[in-house]
Length: 130
Image (cartoon, rainbow, N blue to C red; front, side, top):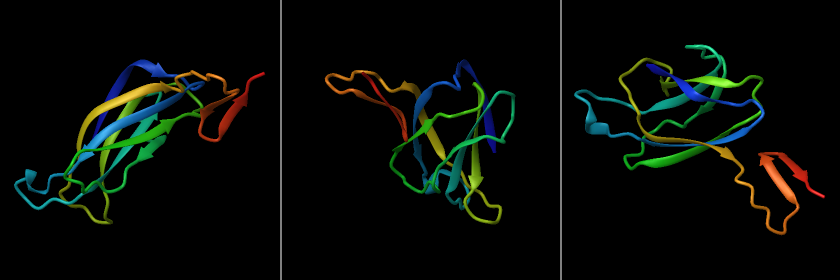
């Protein structure tokens, strides 16, 4: 199962973004036996395009809400559409789900260098300011 959302403001290919989201799993939420699944997030420039995987969670089995965080950067195009997909963590089909809440996407870094002269733009990418 997946859902699609068109972003009100595209994610620029020239920028870096921090994504935070809260995930949980409640075994007794359903009428039948359910198992944990992965959450996959795809970004694209067209509707329903699942060729650009941005992030995949581990199998979500935690009953308490946990915040997961990942970065989006180095894309070849502006991201205008997101697809969020719950996908089997096993090699066979089964009933499963993941609870998702509180998605936050923010540009990073928030620049306040103080006396420092090194600016870290994204993971493994920095600039020395003179």
